[in-house]
Image (cartoon, rainbow over the protein chains, first blue to last red):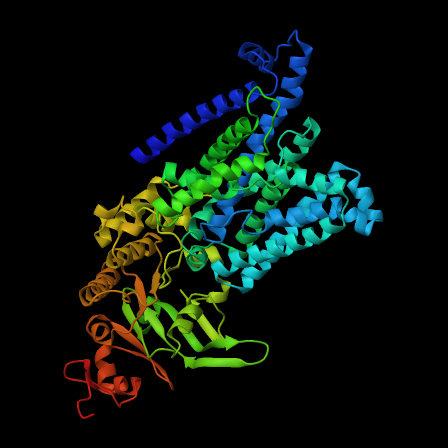
Length: 343
Length: 267
């Protein structure tokens, strides 16, 4: 089919763009390093300038890898949510996954002064934050799912997700009222999102969970396609709805939950990337959409991160602000130009 | 002769009671339903709003359990069918709108092949063949590359029927396939179903409010009234006078000679 051929060409182009973005992302930073040295370093040669060597291998490379994981993971979890809830506005943010993570982190960082003891010990390690965020997002997603089994209306589910966000942000406000200035600052910095704070060791943990989530996503591709018809049709095609729903939710909380835990809440990627992908590929087949969302998510995240670096300056803008600046207009454009967000 | 008849039966119910049961109470919508549907037949299911047509279809398709009694498909109890096996025996066309209309017609019809495809849903040559045959059978090959949101209601209904056909099942069940369609397309759709049943030897059961069209086209009709669920040929049903029991008689009455309902002019 001609369609398939066209898709293959776009895929090759996207992979090339991804490579270019990856290289460009590593090339930019507060210290100017010549392209040649970066290339040399990336192919495994040790540079004479040890500082450069350290910057590239211990700072920029892990940041670029994190960007790829974050962009692709959030994009795919958004795609899964949009199809599961059959709502173009679904995404990790709207369904309250990120606010669940925020609540968990707030409890650990800010709550340590209120609750003391146990939380104070947890607070001591970065893993405490990661654990709290994962647990928070999983619990909120679980709650939304339980509600979604009772309430059939997908619009109601989204509103419930928003209500969960309100409740968590209210609790966070209360906690921050009692927290110290130092703790508050730490929480706010987590909320900015950051790709650059991860060590290789943390990236290994993140990638293991991420790969697990990715693997589960791939196994759900077939049922995702029939879910687009509606649940009753999917069931009539032999899909085990309960099992698929559980798999999809698990994959999403693994992907979005862990990413939020490590990199902070990154807005709009989960919502906007699937829509951008559908504009480019114009298909409903998740066999094409999942890898396409992977590539486009990674590319967009690398670009956003490059922008936030403000090349060759000392400043780094919060990544969350950049993704919102890119993502929100995309959603508005889709609504205005395309009238309805087909999915 | 009798065994031949029994051999032809695809779907059968035995003392079936349908309805809803919760912890508190049991609402029986209809009971003592004994029907048998044969191969290659077009069967219409009629009854007033709220009489339980949808509940009946939902019970036959294992969406909800019966209150009591049994459903047999190909002489096997419905309970013994796994989701996947049922998907290879029974396909559906529902009234609910599609969750996404961004499918191309080919993609949508190809989803009918899901029970047969591998874990990731790759279409083999057999599958593509089945899809193309379904499109040819319904005469919609020219729509193949159109998006579903570009189609009219009548065209979309045909595409959904093609999808059910591609699923290659013994039975196709349609829930009110003629709603939203104009007079011509109502007739067109039911005529198409009639031809499909005849050409493909499938059993096609549909619920409808188009009683006069159903009388003209169906091999058999299931009539649901408050007291009874009856299955018979349209001719026999007319002479039994059941159509007059269908609605309250104050406004419309069944005219046996024309086989349709007429407004009661005396009021």
